[in-house]
Every structure is written in C-alpha cells, then in structure tokens.
Image (cartoon, rainbow, N blue to C red; front, side, top):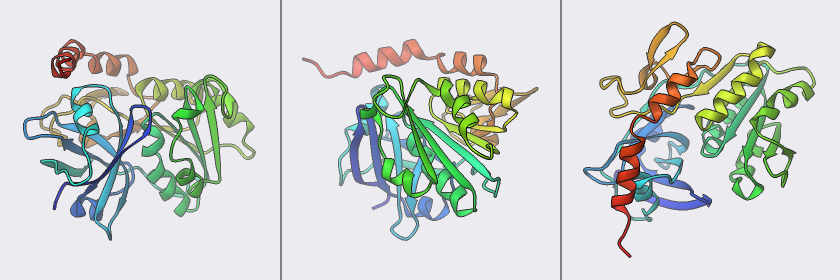
Length: 276
C-alpha cells in the first residue's frame, strides 16, 4: 500500500529512522530534497529531508528527532501501519558537480541527511570527507553507511568520547589539517550547527551550503511561512531552497521565526501526553 510503514526504529536516543513504501517519491527523489509527512489525518504536516531511497524497491527513508507531539506520533509508528500523507519529493536538489574536495558536515538528524549528498558527490568524482558531531559517541549512527560513500569520516564529540573533543567550531581546524585544501563545505543539522559552521568557513572564503529547516505548511510556496532573508532578498525555503549559501543567511531572523509558535508547541505537547 502507498505510505505503508516498512520499518521504524530508534537509531540513537530520540533519533528515529522511518522507512515508508512510497514508489513515486522513490523514483523521482534526488539528493537534498525533502518530503512532508502526516502521522494522522488531522495531524501536523512535518517536512523531513530524505535520507535514503530505493527506486527499484519503491521505499524512502527519513531520520528525525522526537521533540514534540507530532514527531512523537511518527515515532510511535510500527511496521504495517499506514500514514495518510507522504508528499514529495519537494524542494530543489543539492547542486552536485565535481568540485574537488568537499566536506559534508552533519549533526543530529543531519548525520543521515548528508548521506545521499555524500553518495552523489562521491559518484561525481569528488574527494568526500564527512564530519559528524554529537555530544557523545553513543549519539552517532549510520557510521558504516557514511564510510562507504566517503574518503574519510571524522568524529567530533563534546565529551571527547570519540574523535576530536569540541563542537562544530572545530571545523576550521579540521579544514586547516586537510592536505590540498577544501573546495566546498555542505552542512546539515540544527540551525546552531549550520550557523556556527558557517562562521568557521567564512574567513576561509570557502563556499558553504546549508539546508534550512524552517517552519513549513504546504511545502510548495503557497503559505509563505518558510520565508527567509538570504543576502538582500526574501526567499521561500521550500521552493527557492532548501539549500542556500550559508554566508548570506540571516541567522538571527531565522532563529526568531522558528520560535514563533514555541508556546503553542509546548501546550500541544503537554495536552497530548498520556494520563498517568
């Protein structure tokens, strides 16, 4: 059946992998695009980046963090369930070309969303270095998948339990240590990781592409909820992006807009919690 759940598993604490039967999306998907899912008929429309897909088998995968009521409903799905909406692929694909040496950096759910991008860049003949960060080593996942599509996999942990100790602010030092230099950086993850990573690459003059996770409703440019300021222009992340030059994004405005419904989200989460 369309939109049938094939698999749902927790790959790290509060990080879930959801695989769906969605043959039309799987046949058309390209790296960097996203889908919109609804866990129930009157539920919230949630935009999630495609983490993998198989055109022959007709399935797609997304990886998401459980943070509220709606993602909690997605996290409660099990194999055999069906969801009413899986719309996509949406957004523009990531630009894939032979750039030279490319760093694909990801944190949290961004660890999964850089996988298809790294795979495509490697197939295009690039030297691909994946950099993933987390608070501790137990929050890493998909390491083997990333190793298969990259020339090098670098870990950063804030507690020093694996790889380099620190945060994404180590990115500048990592770039400096790479022989031959870096031609492009792609960062996926939360706004802080993308913003901080861009601060590291800005003084180095390396083009840095980010995938913005703005608030969205329809995903087709009709509602305007996802508008962002990039350079001197107003853009809609869903149709003009979601990929933008990170050095041109107004990060303060983006952060403020993402918190516009924080109170309502908290109320929804509290009222949807099961009674004790």
